[in-house]
Amino acid sequence: MPASRRRSHVEAEHIAIVAARTAAAQAAREALESLYPIKSPEDADVIVALGGDGFMLETIHRFLSSGIPIYGMNRGSVGFLMNPYSSDDLIGQVRRAESASLHPLKMIAHLASGARVELQALNEVSMLRQTRQAAKLRIEVDGRVRLEEMICDGVLVATPAGSTAYNLSAHGPILPLDAGVLALTPISVFRPRRWRGALLPRTAKVRIEVLEPDKRPVSAVADSTEVREVAEVDIEENRDVAAVVLFQAGQSLSERNLAEQFSL
Image (tube, rainbow, N blue to C red; front, side, top):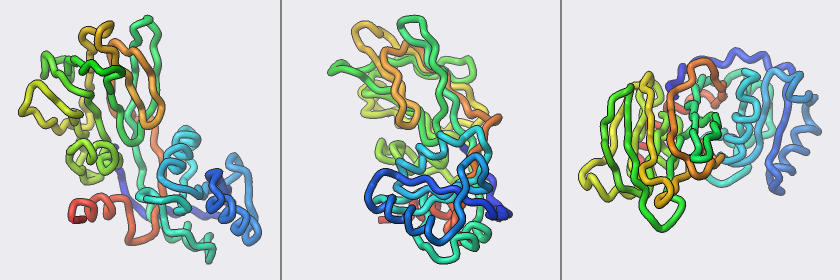
């Protein structure tokens, strides 16, 4: 998910607020609604999301096709995608923000039943074993088989913005936001033993085929949406869709990804 960075240039005359169901997020929503005129998301110039990273991803997915910029404020735990919460000068905060335009991955899952499911993923597409049996997968990139058979718990394709999430936990690399690459990262790989993943150009078309699906069923997950008993999955960056996410000046998503590489 390469990202272009720029000042937001959002007029922010009309703000909508969405909040997670937690007490902290709801209290912040009530405080902001008492201070600023609030519009519905359909009539807003910008959407302010109150919660944690999980809620921020939900909000981005919810408004992905709208093109409305989203400014997150942390009322959760980690808050990697969020700005610090402050009720002071919210309009000014948004107008001074830097924006990142993020392209999701498109996942097309072909199920064992013959059904076809298409989903978007801003962080990663993961394929995971469903039972105690390890998965057997064949990996093809741009029409060429690169791994004939991999025995593993799973594999994922991560965007740069998502490379600090599940991908990092699976010992994948952190990707600079403007690197123009995707991470292909195995999860608990057994064979081939020394394969630790690959960096792919953002234009790559990845196909992952499930071998022995009856004995070794596999699910596919696009961010937090799971599809079970898949036979084959196609993954590529969707350049036709972009989410615009706003960050305080000096705290851009690109800077956060870079800083994460030096964290102890």
